[in-house]
Amino acid sequence: MNTTNRKCEYCHKSIDHRGPKAKTCNNTCKQYAMEVRQGKREPVPELEVETKPEVEAIDRTELEKQLAEMDKVIAESENELMHFEEEAVGLDYQLESKLLMKNFRLRESKNDFTIKHFHSSGEITGSELLKYSTEVIRYPFEKLENPLFSSMGNPIQPFVATINGDKNTGKTVLGVLISNELTNYLGSKVLHVLDFENRDRAAAYYGLTKSSSENLLFKYAKSYNEIVDTLGKDNYEFLILDSIQGLKLSYENLKSIKRDFPKLSIFCVIKGANKSIVDASSISFETEAYSDLGINGANARVFVDGISNEEQQVDIFLNQDRGFSIRF
Image 1 (spheres, rainbow, N blue to C red):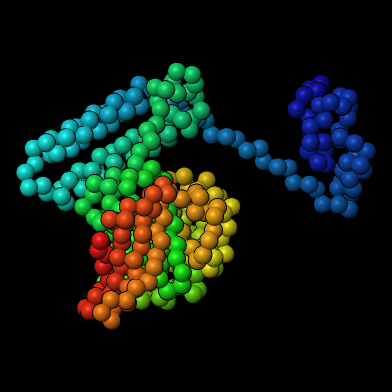
Image 2 (tube, rainbow, N blue to C red; image 1 turned 90 degrees about the horizontal axis):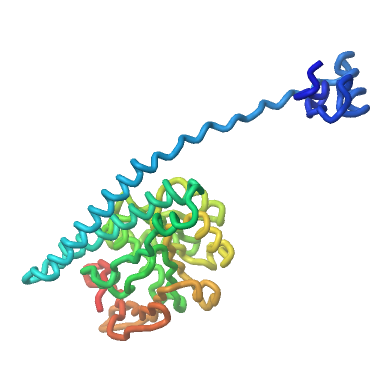
């Protein structure tokens, strides 16, 4: 008689621990099984056993070839940058910016490849951790031919930035301008989330800039869960939240977003003090309103790792042609 892999007639749990003549796991199941046979009780459906798909073995040789090819392409990119800096006469700043971002994206891709094919497998230990280590990479903003980005230094990917200031000091305007630069200049995917108070104002500002991009999703949200659900539908590189208070987001919500989307950089528009989020940020824009010859606008002092360079102050203003721009 087979005494292994036996199941209870009623609940289908294992009864291998019981005697060879037992057909149920206890007297209750014995009574219920009899009632099922008499038509007095519905039978319990037997759960299907979930079979996990076989994990395909990692072909280390092929992966290492791809990794070596990436290293080669990165080295060529770095040589191209070095040659440009040494030989260029009458510097082509736009070309330099393209070369800098190309090098950044190549190193970013290598990190992603290493994490996906080596770290995520859980099969590397000891000396292999050093062999397949990832690089801490920084956005090359400081050298880009773009005043907004150059004011932000070279932040580590990902980063948190805050836009802080009193009411009507240009925080939402600055969020729109940052969004435009990220999508149009860097070609990054941006999710710009607005609360009820700021959504119409931001929509008007987007209209004034006359800038649109397929990489931008401008969205009004009512809850944290709605924001997370939207983030999960695309590969966003940047998230702009305007405002933290209006969207009713806590520091714990922010930490959860950072954990669930580890490559996502976040700009937080804050009304007043929020020490936890400010402390978590490496970049801070502090806005202040001004009036110049009848034109209302706002300045933003930029702090990088707590230090402000007073020579680099973002000035957001409304020109006579009703288009927003940035100057220093």
